[in-house]
Amino acid sequence: MFLLQEESLEEVINKTTLENPEVGGAVSFEGRVRNVNKGKKVTLLEYQVYEEMAVLEGRKVVEEALKLFPIKEAICIHRYGQLKIGERAVWVLATSKHRKEAFKACQYIIDEVKKRVPLWKKEFYEDESKAWVECLGCKGTSASV
Amino acid sequence: MKSIQVKYFSSLRDASKKDQEVLSIESPKKASQIFDELNERYHFSLDRSYIKVAINEAYQDWDTLLHGGETLVFIPPVAGG
Image (cartoon, rainbow over all chains, first blue to last red; front, side, top):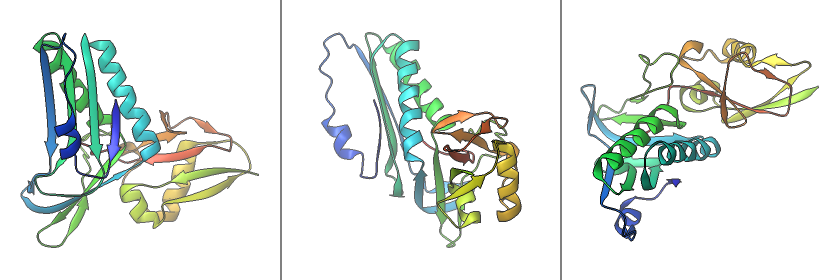
């Protein structure tokens, strides 16, 4: 399952329960808004999204993880819109019988989401300047890892 | 005359000052050709080598021909996570 939402992720994370008795390992990752990037003090983030394609590409990533690793479930939820420092921007959960597969699947999902899902991040700085975060060292890959 | 819908995001939206627009084409055109024409008009801050192409919500090659009726999006380096 891959979802995009503008609202905080707190509620959905707190409400998620693991009921499959075959699950012995659950690995989650959360990406949070950091207050510094490349030495500049960040005060606010804004995620812009190409929603129609982001949902399709995000679902592909999660489906790939389910095929590549012997896991039970995989979920990824990404926020868009304005986020404050410390807020969760993305949450990934992978569950499996044993921990190793869940760790691998969780890492695969977040890495691929960062490379492929069309979301863009604008940082607002303390000095009132702002800039799109663009990984120009990732020529031809669109990656921003 | 056929039309293509072009959507803009991130720094390309800032440069074009629009979310989207409809382009008319008389004959099939490569995605790269359309980008170069738009770049002349809007002076994007990113070189084509940093950008990917999406046609109808899926990544495609720059050489892909557009015949009309498609949605075309130039994807600057993504930054999710």
